[in-house]
Length: 392
Ligand code: BGC
Image 1 (cartoon, protein in one colour):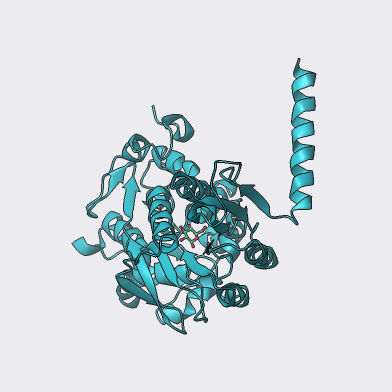
Image 2: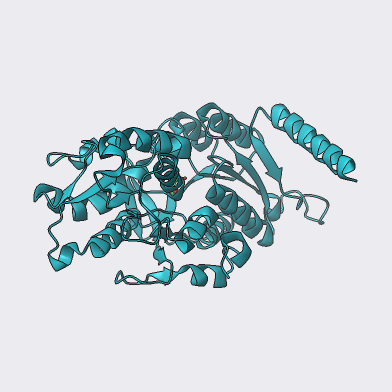
C-alpha cells in the first residue's frame, strides 16, 4: 500500500517535472472557458486576459494568480496564468507568448520592474493593455494602469508597531538595538515600504535611541541607501545568511537584540531561523525575544505570531487586489472607463493607479495602531484556515 503511494507520488513528480521542462520552466495554467461554451468568434468573451506572476515559490503570488484567474473566468472571459519562477527571461518570454496568442490585456506582477520594460513595450505596440499588478513597471510609458496596496503604509504599520512595543513615544530612551532589512533591490515597492518605516524610525537613529550593532544602519543612513540593506529576490535563505553574519556582532547574546524591521514574512522567517540556529539565549514569549515585523500574513508567519516568534505582519488581502484587477480588466474589455483616482510615477510617466488598504495583524489584535486585527480575524475572513496556522 505504502509502496503504491510512493510510486504514484514519484510518477506525479516526474510528470510535473516534464511539464515544467516543456514550458521552459514557467508554469502555466490555462482557463477551460474556451471549451465550447458556445461563444462565437468575435464574441467579447473570447478575449484572452494573460496573467504573469513573478514566482510560485512564495505563497502570496499563487494566491494572487489563482484568485485573479478565477475572478476573470467568473466574469466569463478566458484567463491564462503563468509564473516566471523569479526569472526575468521567463517573464519576458511569457509576455511574448501572450502577444502571440493575441491577448487583449496582460496583467504583470513583475519579477523585475525595470527589466520587464522592453517586453511590455512590445505588448503595447501590439495594442495590448498592460496592467502592473502589485509591483510598478518602471522607466516606460507602456504601462496603462497600476493596482496595488498603499505602499508606504506597509512600512508605517511595521515601524509603528516597533515604536509602540519599545515605548519610544512614551519617552523610553533605550538605547535599543535594532536590525533593519529592505526587500529586493529590483522591486520598486521595497523602497516605498522602507520609506514609510524610515520616516518614523530615522529621528530615533539620529537621537541615538535606536542603534544597529551590526553597523548596517548608522545615524547618517538615508532613504537612498535602502539597497545597502536589501535582500535579493526577497529570499528567506539570503535573509538568514545576512542575519547570521549580523549576529556575529552580538557576542553570543551578550548584546541584546530588541527589534527587527523586516519588510516581508519570508525575510522574518530567515531572521528567526538565524537567531534560533545560533542558539542565542533569547526565548519567544519573554521580554528577551526581539519584536519582529513582517508582511503578507503568510501561514508560517501567522503560526509564528501565535507562538510569539514574530510580533506582527501586514496583511494585504490578495483577494481584494485580485477582485479589483479583475473588475478593471472587465471594464477595459467592455470599453468602459476605469476609475483610477491616484497616480504613481515610474520615472517616465504618472501611471493611473488604484491604491488599496492594508492592516496590521498581531496575535490578539493588541496594538494601538488603528485597524490592527488578530490572527483569528484573518482566519475568520477565510484567507487561511485555523489548521494551517495552528489556531486552536
Ligand atoms: C509585495 C509584497 C511581498 C514581496 C515579496 C512585494 O512586491 O508587494 O507583498 O511581500 O513583494 O514577494
